[in-house]
Length: 395
Image 1: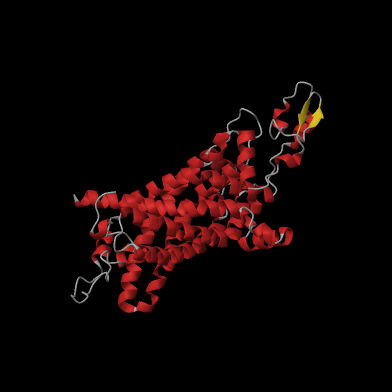
Image 2: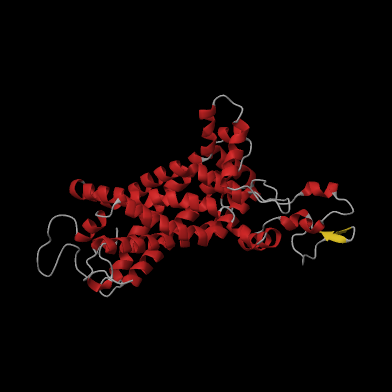
């Protein structure tokens, strides 16, 4: 990536880069001149980017990330749904088998040696269809449903990621800049907390706006289609299926609340995730950029953003896994009345009582494996697109 300023990397990059002089000195100093009042030029350049440019940058980053990490999201959701009792073995077929029945649907894989002979062909016992870990989910989904099912819910994921991140990152940028400017002048001791507050508020706005799409994606990934040749419902049909039990009710407006099932759990998960993520990411990114400030180039800046995002995303995902489990439990509940009565606190208590502490961390492996690269990709690509748009505006 060409262009940039001193040392070869883009001086206007947000947050960490905005506070580092690329020649190795203080951000607002040059040679022996005393510091000048006002924000650094890098911050000013970053603040000149409009909301539309930030949203385009963030949406592009989210598009790439959603496609790459979707299989891990499927694995995480399947493991959490299985723990909640979602069946992945169609037991009723056993009683309806006839002489001409197709038994391939009752095989976990053609090479399975645990099959029980029924008629002329073996069938697998129910526990063969139980997922035992992330890799096992990948293998069984590919064998039983096809390779493409690892990207089940990608359309909903893209429909979710683009507006969510398109709201989230631009709002975070704007809120953080405003809060830092205010605290720098009025309460310098509070400036380090700007990423935490900005990230929490921005994530709350994004979660509330896009919760129905998150509900559709979770259901699409959690449930398995048993009938061969039948295409699983897409995002819109899934949402219509959520609404259909309420279609005959006269309180149509109030019934749309069911589309926000689990939004409380989602906020309880995503706001702490965002607070932990940004509070971890910004210091790490600042440290890494400080190490390469003397001779850094565009690649080193992108590397610093990806590494900081990877560490922060992984840490935040692990810490908030119990809240993610609670969100999944609430959103896959098909009894609409029960789903509306469920609370995040009660769901966590029920999981702890029935499954122990281990149940609260169901799917933590694929969740962490997904979040680390996802945050790293989004942050890095976000900066790339912002840089390209900035260069275009400058020219």
